[in-house]
Amino acid sequence: MANIHAGSDYDYNRRQLLKLAGKGVVLGAAGLSLPNLLFMREAAGVNLDPNLQLFDGFLQIFFTGGPGIGQDIADFKDPAENPTTTFNPINLGVNDVYNNPMRVTDAIENIATMAMGDPAISLAVVRSMRHNSNNHGQGQQHNTSWWEGGLMNMMPAIAPTMAYYMQGKGIGIPSVIVNGNNGNNANSANGNVRIPTALSVTVGGNQGNNPVVEALNLPQGVDQARYTRRKAMLDQMNAKFLQANPDQMAQAYEKATKDAFDITMKGEAAQAFDLNGATILPSGNNGIAQRATLSQNLLLAGVPYVSMGIGGNDYHGNANDSVTNNWVNNVDVFLPAMLTNLKNSGKRYLIQLCGDFDRTPDGKGGFSGAGRDHWGHAQSHILVGVNQPKLKTTAAGDTGPRGVGTVNETRRSGQPGGLTDPFPMAAMGYVVYRGMGINLFQPDGYYDIPTQLREAPPVERQIGLTDGVKLSNFLIA
Image 1 (cartoon, rainbow, N blue to C red):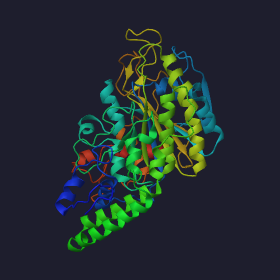
Image 2 (image 1 turned 90 degrees about the horizontal axis):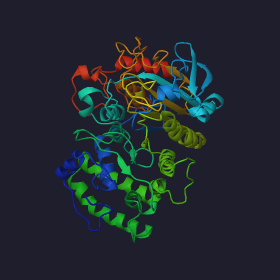
Image 3 (image 1 turned 180 degrees about the horizontal axis):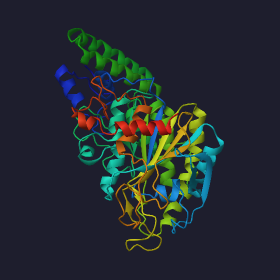
Image 4 (image 1 turned 90 degrees about the vertical axis):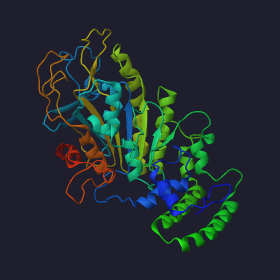
């Protein structure tokens, strides 16, 4: 089998194709060509369940360092209980799942205004995600994989999992990491050899010279007529191979080659990655603006999963300044503009905003300047829905009046309290994977995140099922 992008043609036999499929890498990760990426999809035979799918695209915006999303952004606490806050409450006019008024802070005033006034935009908050780690690397990996404990080093992260399930969707690129503060091991398959990693791309400079853009365009010096002639010659060469090897692997590679030819001829994928001449989203930080713009454009082009990050959230001191810089001056500026553009596409999107962990609500622990310590015992995740009315504007989980209540935890706060509806990371995986159309239930009746990727004992495969269904029922009508 020949490679349409190759400078000289060469053959693959079935053993080589199997070996290629087992490497679990894609374009940008190890130099594989686009046909090889698409071949993996064809050979795997991955299918989604359209009856489950609620969203056409998912964006994870990751805040490395551990932002106080619960204390400062999405779950307003009275200043008497949260003396370091300078942000004011916004009552969204709806109740949480416990029939109490849902209040966020004016650090996301523009986003809140959209959620209140635009029926196409919904704002859901999960206040009680917990993984019990105050270590940055572990906290990040919990949130970039939706696994806890040893499983986070055994199972693929979100980006590779999406790369596996979303192969061939949209412009043919299933999963993209926009490099920069994406979180620990955000693109690790953790030894699962059948899992492709996400395509990684960095913004800035001349995007036309970006190797990803180059790989998705016609080869240098080759026009469409010559490219078509090359494809015709390749078809003739492959015909003899296919006749002698009429098996699934050979057919899969032939189909992948055709798809790669179509992708490069159309140029849609390359255009989606190219920021030259693109309208950059407004933001107080140019790097964040470019990452957000590329993320938006990839979603609009049909890439199912995108990850982008924002750093500078480890505020042991000057918490209010950090929140103002990252949220007021950046997120609350670019995200409303992005939401408008996504809404106008008519497609359905889900955006998750999260970080390593939350912060303690005061400066205890020797930190000054309104600083806060790490708090992995309860963290908040924000989910923003676009064009999907089934996702409610509401909040689930409760951390008590000080935002630190946990099941058996009084450390740092000095206050006893109970965490209402604590959710493990796998529960968020259940909501998002199912929402993207991935059927998590196996023929043997077990539940798995992700499925078909490794032989996991049933006790592992059942983690998060009850909580996942519960969280889904809270958030999705």
